[in-house]
Image (cartoon, rainbow, N blue to C red):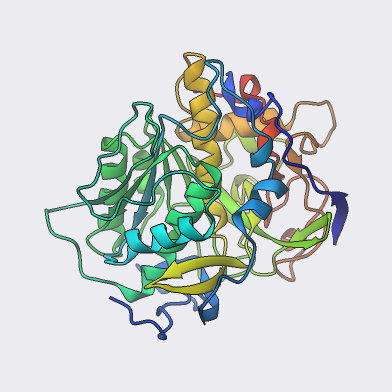
Amino acid sequence: MHGTRRRRTAASVTVCVCFLVAIGLAVGAAPAGTGAELRGGGEAHVLSTIVHGPLAHPSGFAPTQIRNEYGFNEMGDDAKGRPIDGQGQIIGIVLWDSDAHLQSDMAQFLKTYSYLKGMNGLTSKTACKVSTTIHSTPCFQVAYATGVKPPPMNEGAMGEASLDVEWAHVTAEGSDILFVEAASDKGSDLLVAVKKAVSMKASVVSMSWDQTGITKADDPVFEASTAGFVSGSGDFGCPDNSGQVYPSGSPYVLSVGGTELTIDGTESSQETWYKSGGYAYNTELRPAYQLNWSGDSYRVDNDVAYNAVDYPVTEAGAWWTENGVSAGIPQWAGLIADADQARAALGKSVLAAGGLLDGIYLAAASHDAVPPVPDKAMFTDITTGSAGSKPVCKATKGWDWPTGLGTPHANAFELAEVAGASQ
C-alpha cells in the first residue's frame, strides 16, 4: 500500500484550507440500482454500490475518522475570525430522486454522530430556505428542478441521495445544502437541475452520477462564473469501456477518483481503488491546467481522489454501507465550500468552473519538479494499486488517471495559490 503515514491529530491550526483561499423504501429491502452495470447510450448511473445492509447500527468509517484523515479537524479560522466550515456557502446536490425519508434520515445520521452541529430538526421542505447569509444553523432545502410537485420516486437513486447529503455535511458543517430533484435521469433534465442549483446560488454543485447523453456540446452549462462543479468518471474501472461520459469529462468539472483507505490504530494508508475510473476524452483538447501533468493530447480524468470505501448511510431508518467515488464527490464539494468561505472573508469570489481546476493544478505544482509531482503539503500522492490492466490505469508517482493529483490535506490548502481564473 502507499506509504503508511502517521495520522494527523485534531489540533487546531490557523492555516486551514489556505490552498484555495487567496487567489418510499421499506426497511429490510436494499435500495435498487448498484451502479455496477455497464451503461448504454443516454443512460444515467449513480456512482455508488451498496455493500452491506440493512443494519441496526452503522458499519464503516465514522465522520471523525474521515475528517481526521484528510485534515478537516485541523482547519482554523477565516480572515474574519469565524471557524472555516463552509459558512455562507450553498452546496447544490443534483440527483433524479424523490425521497420522502431524506430529511428524517439526515436527522438520524446527525443524532448518531452528535459531534456534528446543524441540521437535525429540519424535518420539512418548508422548514428553511438556503441562503448565502451567515447563520448559526445550516439549512437543508429540497427543490424541484421543474414544477411544484416532486418527481416520481426512484429507488435506484435513494441510497445515493442519503450518501451525498450526509457526507457533504461532514466536510462542510456550516454550509447550507440544496438538494435539487431532477424530473428524470435524462441528460436534458439533469442539466436543467444543475442550472436550477446555480440559479439558487449554489457556490459548488455535486453530481455523483454520469450520463452518457451529456456531451461536449453541454460544456457551457459548467462554465458558470458563480459556481464550481464536481463529479467523477465512475466505478467501472479504468478505462471506462462504455465510452466517454459526462459531466466528469468536461474541462470545467473537477473529476474525483477513488482510493481505498485503511486505518490501523494511529496509522493509515491508501492505495488506488480497483474500480476507480479514468478516461481520455478525444472530443476535448487537453486543458491548459493539465499541461505537463498529462502526456495526452486530450482532457483526461481524474483530477483528484478520495476514499471510496466503507461509508455508513441511513435510508428509511436503516443503516447501509456504501462504496463508490460518489462518496468523495460531495466531500470534495464540501472542501470547496470551505475554501469559498475563506475566500469570501478576503473579499474574493468563489472558485468557479475552469478557475477551480486552474487553481488546484497550479497550487499542486508549487515547486520546480519536472515532471511535476503534487505538493506533499496539500496532497497525498497515491502511488500504488491499479484500476485496470493498461499502464495508464496504474497508480504512479505524480498525477495519474485513476487518482489524479491524489487525496487532499484540507488544512493546508493555500488559497492564495488557488486563485486561477477566480479572483
